[in-house]
Length: 479
Ligand code: ADP
Ligand code: ZN
Ligand code: MG
Image (cartoon, rainbow, N blue to C red; front, side):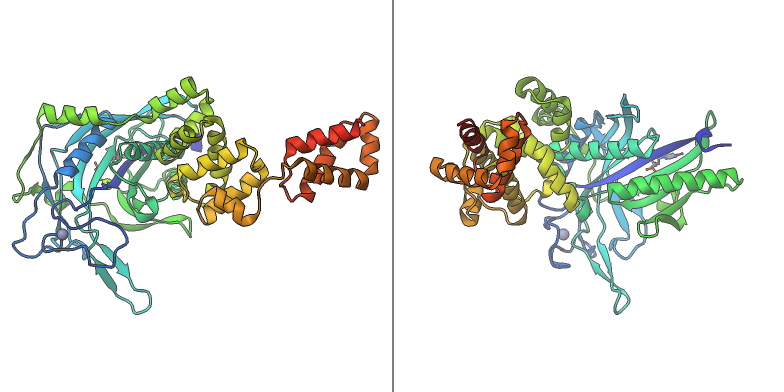
């Protein structure tokens, strides 16, 4: 049978660290990047007798996530112990949720590979605590345990196996990330592990039941996830073709080698011996509590997109690009508001800023300058202080060492030459140096003018006011 006779099935379990100030069961800070074991206490290091107290913000954030993904919020939920033994889990169990998750039966809308809208169902969203971190010491061997992350709140968002291609998986993850950022419950910094996915992949022949899945744990790069799915698809189809039975396994994707490795056979729910957490009360939520959170939800990407098109006259493509990221869309709104030139702010963000981010392999959240900086850059161009080609150089500076664009052009001496006599001087000089082009122009070759202006821009190192140069050349040539 051919590859086309198989169907690919993907289900994603996404872990997102919530951006609460304190941990889920104690008042330790959650901030990333602190010295190892400085954000710890008896509760999150599992000292005997220390008892957990549930952080109410965690419930609020998880309910927000549930509402933003069209879930039903359970008014009667609870915590459970999930037992497993690993050195970064000091209690030897994780407090999670088993049979009564906080949110269930939602969906996220994405586009399928043909561009048609498609709903990916969400089975459940539950709250749980993160584990600590093992730092493997390559030099001396052995591992050091850092418990700063132990007890950082997580939500786990489990999709139904509705995803049918690596492209759909990519769009689902990006959409989910953008939703979580819009409602401001997670910073979703993948490079810091704030957003990571377990990727379940299986294949089956068309019109037959689903195949057995392979699960790849803890993936935190969109690119690797796509590559891993494509790899698994090919490898599982080739196994199926050769009559090899696929067993349920947990795998590790190796980005360098470009293949997966077996970590362990997959455990089942019974291996975890779940039972209700006896140290915590049940979670009962009133209608009013849930409704208040619903009312507090901010404007979502769809609505922003519609507004950008109807009120600001942006194209659908531009509106889509901007709203795909909350960070980008926030900068756009704020900078546009300040300089009143939304169109130009949009062009900067979607072309030059996007290109630089791409080159740096960074996300819009990592843009180092402020909306005020960008608005000032647009204003400097609009009022003729600098040309747009100097504007590009200012943008490079904003990425390298963010500061006020006014200060940048002063430091660098990049102010546009708009002085009439200075412009005239350059024009005369270029005309004298290029008699051939002058003759061409007089013979009706309009292109010669563009060449002359280009030479003048070169002469002024990009600082000549292009509009004035154009006019001055025409004036002189027509004399
Ligand atoms: P576990 O925690 O044991 O992995 P869950 O039920 O929490 O189990 O998650 C199962 C995940 O695997 C879900 O995202 C689901 O959509 C996905 N899944 C289930 N069956 C398949 C399958 N046959 N192929 C691919 N993914 C699957
Ligand atoms: Zn603590
Ligand atoms: Mg799993």
